[in-house]
Length: 380
Ligand SMILES: Cc1cc2nc3c(=O)[nH]c(=O)nc-3n(C[C@H](O)[C@H](O)[C@H](O)COP(=O)(O)OP(=O)(O)OC[C@H]3O[C@@H](n4cnc5c(N)ncnc54)[C@H](O)[C@@H]3O)c2cc1C
Image 1 (tube, protein in one colour):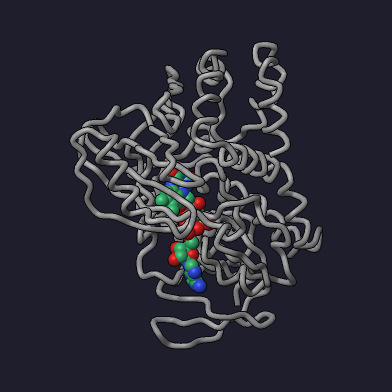
Image 2 (cartoon, rainbow, N blue to C red):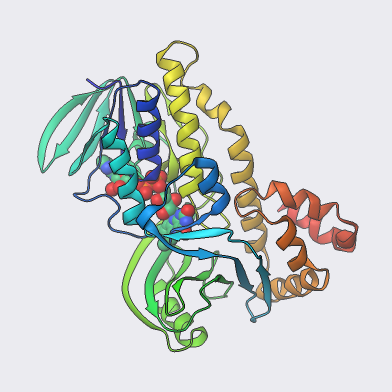
């Protein structure tokens, strides 16, 4: 009997399992799919800073290195932030997850594929293993089972359709700036945006997200035909992104959530790989301390406060942007551009930790005339 069962072999689950094993805890991972990292419905854009902080080895998963972003307002006004240094990497998620899987197995973590969690009663897990029902036991059960988490339901946390962004992504051949990602705020990408993340100068991952209920396939086709030169899309994938503040109440008895299951995702971009893995380090230490009777599992939420502060800030930025009409967004772009936002972000920008630069922005005398905007932002 493992002390801990981790449900889901995505980055959050595998990182939790790896760290637990390194801390001397017996851990098994149960993954419903036959292969790890598929279906691949992630753009794989992760910050260089996050990769370094987590000590990740990207190996063959590395597809490209990124130096900046072009952000377009609904009418096409552009804010361009380009640095001399690499600020982010594009990875192939199937390969990225496979590297974590190999690492986990190498140190002795048992990972079962085609093994789906159906239900939990106390220490007993009801598992469907290649269509056969089985029972397993574990002291602590970690729900790293993604956006549609079963463990989240078992904990009793309810969601509604506004808690998710519906996305569609394709790979396109065409002509792209290989060092720059593009973000397009569009009236037909309601509540989110369209993106272009280059893999090379002639290939990019192109996608669009919107609130549930919108026709995202049509919207993506419109975006590609209107904005991308000579782009030829192939192979579409559709998936949900959690949208909201990180969840509270993510520990109940011996059940606990991590990663997308806990909404540990940046609401600005939908990025959750780095935050999920950082949270995994916090969770695994808390589980080890709990098993060693140094703390209780509930302390996990307290230890998440610093990361949650950043995630809450991402949500604040997204909520503010979503509260503006397309013409208000255009106006904001112009004002920020005129006040030198591009130079400011080149120097101070941080794609994971907005609290590090928003404070500096709001207290910079250059932006004092935008006090009204600042107040609207803080109260959005
Ligand atoms: C279109 C799109 C683009 C994205 N782009 C980026 C990006 O550029 N950068 C970034 O950082 N993030 C991005 N994300 C978000 C990122 O993919 C997620 O935040 C990340 O995968 C979350 O990791 P996780 O381990 O929590 O969950 P997942 O990676 O979703 O892993 C969960 C695992 O649990 C398994 N599972 C589910 N239910 C069960 C069950 N009952 N029993 C057993 N196994 C189960 C699933 O099969 C899956 O393997 C994107 C998401 C989407 C949809």
